[in-house]
Amino acid sequence: MEGIVIKSTGSWVTVRLSDGLTRECKVKGQFRIKDIQHTNPVSIGDHVEVSFTTGSDAGLICRIFPRNNYIIRKATKLSKRSHIIAANLDHAYCVVTLANPRTSNGFIDRFLVTAEAYYIPASLIINKMDLIDDKQKIVLEELIRIYESAGYRCYRVSALTGEGVAELTDCLKDKVNLFSGHSGAGKSALIGAIDPDLKPRVGQLSRAHQKGMHTTTFAEMLELHQGGFIVDTPGIKEFGLIDFEKEEIPRCFPEMERLLPHCQYKNCTHTHEPGCAVKQSIGLGTVSTLRYNSYLSILDDR
Image (tube, rainbow, N blue to C red; front, side, top):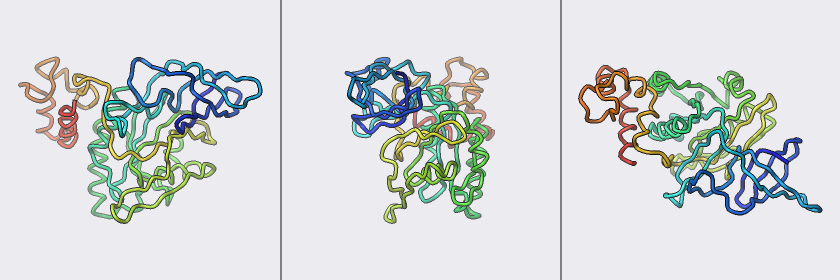
């Protein structure tokens, strides 16, 4: 039978079969997909073929169908290998908070660059709007201006008050949506506000470091009652980039890619070349200095 992987806890994965039932399955042999060195051969969202033996409820994944896309990050303990967070996504959302904990621009930009690299539409969810004071509102408006100018939609939401939840829920309908962000960004509470039937666990912030305590320990695809899925991921501290070349980075910043035809050189890296439209736009304020600094930082990592 065919199905889709909805949960992975290591050696076992849960597959939602085409008949609507779910089964625990093992992975057959060592899968290698496009020669990518990754820690998990089967990921959330994979479409698979499962075989069963008489007298056993457990299945065996014997085939992984080609992926439309996937989003990856560096493995936490094996920095030279990658970890596939999820596959076959329709949209990726970075859940952002301005405080308790604060999401850095560097994290946001690396998430968005990874989504761009694998052709996954992406947006920002500004969560915990109920905690934003007058001083933070100035930071919020500038953050939204920067990312909406770059081409990313920003949703203002509060899992506590319900602000913006209905609008976001409508956008999730009938799609496979990834939610990712730091621990403590409120992903679990937000998912519960979107669909109370899911009732995910909600954690507290570490008092010592004002960072989130992990409540999601493994990625899981959650089915929404109105149609569609949310891929809930464990909190990510850093989003290390992997598996694409330095020359691809400029394409992954939409506001810079749009300006490339106006640069003096067709292969402009927007760093040292004369007649660079991107650097000129930074001077005019139409390209964000914060985004450009993230771009330089990512280039230095390659």
